[in-house]
Image (cartoon, rainbow, N blue to C red; front, side, top):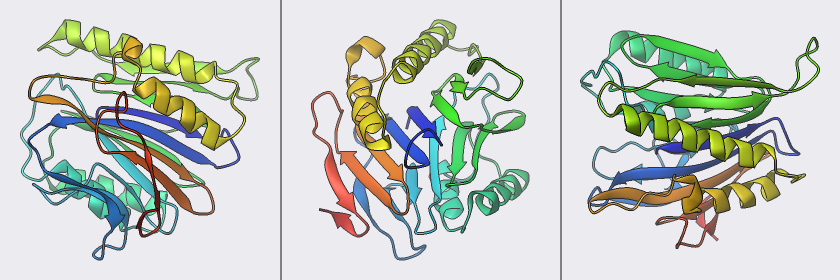
Length: 260
């Protein structure tokens, strides 16, 4: 997954996430479904056995993007397995503890990882060094070269605060700058939205993810946007999933046990 947009505690549902997954077309995967072990709802990477995003019945959502690292490191375990393991936890706080423990014990390739529930949202940046940000209520966009956001006004500020954490990859600096600009444009469009509900926000986010003007729906010869996901976490989690690029693939609704 390479573009992740988040509305955290902005609407009636406390968490809304819209995301594109960019991957090799030949890499096999399955659409969202109920897993037995652990008991989660997620699509599956059929090659490595993990996932790139998912939810559980406790309202925990975990999602990952690649990170175009300045210091490329080899991993000895699939990052999707880390997502799977974090989803087995009963809260974002517990999932964050698991992630920290895993990063101390194992080697993973660089990533950005969102761990969130109705009360807490954590964003991990894993590279040669690690960082962790507790997200304030707001709207955020996470890509391959970092992330940006607009958080609600703190008590001592007169207007919402914009934050950004991008870097320029040593290999492909122009690509990194372009990705950052695309993410900022997506953020601007989402923040300027006049939607009043999480569902309406996700409707618009899904359109933006499929709009080539924003540069986040990718069509290469062997690599591109393979799927897109819209998830709303309120009392329960509701899913919409496009099993293909969102510019040309309609979103299908999924319930707790599969497609509806």
